Image (cartoon, rainbow, N blue to C red; front, side, top):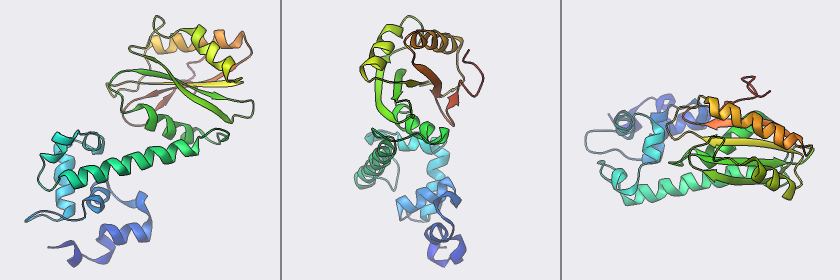
Length: 225
């Protein structure tokens, strides 16, 4: 049965207009992007098959050109459309935390840091520098590789914080494995950096670990001394 023959309340586009995008399942959102199905399958059926094959939305959205185009119903046009959509999403999130923006809530920070760091295949350690009103001064990717006390240099973090005249800092790094749980090394370097920044009167507000799912806040976990 074609989607046009479904009850109006069950059609993805109509459902989005009536209830908002957040009310749709991953398959329904993907079906709207796909627009059409293939022989014997509606766009929703194809979307469900894709999610089953890839496991979730993230691996599908991060598939390279060759992987993406191997799937029946996908091709160069849809790949370029998807890349454009992803880049627009990243740019939108960057604009929400552009220079001078005041951080109003933790979720806003989580969303931005996730968009910047989740796709890296290696660990990337970054700093979000803020003024005394928690307005964004700069976001800087400082170190790459395994994050531990040997590769994260407190002197460089302090040097950058002073360069931007920061009053506060939020740290973030990704776990390419997808497991967001902070390691003992993460906790150790966080507290080491807090001490180093404190010596020049700069506050360390938090350290987010980015993996699959929701980023983990060390401050919320009570792991920052």
